Length: 376
Ligand code: BMA
Image 1 (cartoon, rainbow, N blue to C red):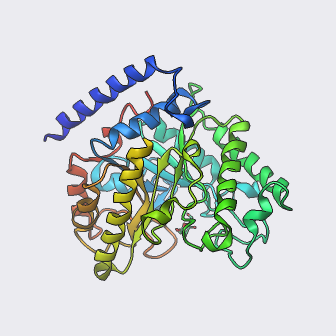
Image 2: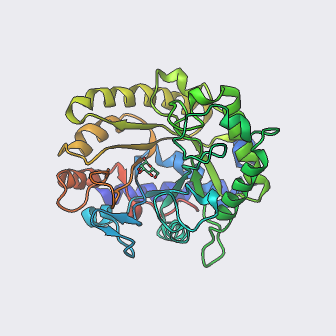
């Protein structure tokens, strides 16, 4: 199908859904998570569901902030340099915001992150935010897993509870500050406490009980809502440990989660193709069922092959699997400007760049210009 025709139909469907949903605005009985969220946020969720029936958005972490051979240039993007359009989804990380500093753990100004989230909204795309926060008990970073009981220490009655609520106040201020020039609060897909089925973060599987993890999630959700944060959808994003059932072990409940996510990386280059595709197929098939049952969109919230040495990775390895599932978006990790070979999206002349153009040209892959009515 011609890409233009495809998107005209997609936009028409989005428009029809929008009209229908406007009539139902006051009745969210079958959408338990949508109470007290802005209309734009509610529409984002509805349209994520619709999009996943047609194709999937392409996303890139820190896309407009820096890339290979550049840092901080205005309006630049490695993805755009290759295909002429921005990713439909952009990821940003607010790690270190809790320390009240000006810059993130990856040395990016929070003012810049705020501006880029607003810019992405203005061009019609979506932003998702993760939080690699420090360890509130030891003062170490997210990966400081030497001490168990950190999650317990920030729950109510824990010794770090008040301190942690102070951190959430800072996060709430950030989300509440995401307003456009026209006064619209920009919706964001928040993805806290990610990859918890592994044990490399202090909120991981071996570091807290399932019940503590769920309490942590619910406390975060409810406290932010109490601070007036009404522009968030929540994505649950375990890593690829074990069979599908492990996915739900620490699920906090349908009323606290809007999108079922999954983080899964391709490791070991050519030798790792089979294992990667096997993990994707196993968990995405499980998520597709759960998503249908729970009426929630699914997404591949983090993925990628570091430095993409396989020339046809985009079409042969990634697309061939995603094509089989109703995924709303896929996000590849950042193109670090200061860590050699730590990049996951192509840049001009990169070995997979031509294949990425083919991936882009496929009508099922959605970039920023393909998505216009996400919030209407
Ligand atoms: C990791 C790496 C780190 C980075 C962190 C948060 O996967 O990219 O270099 O600090 O994400 O962005």
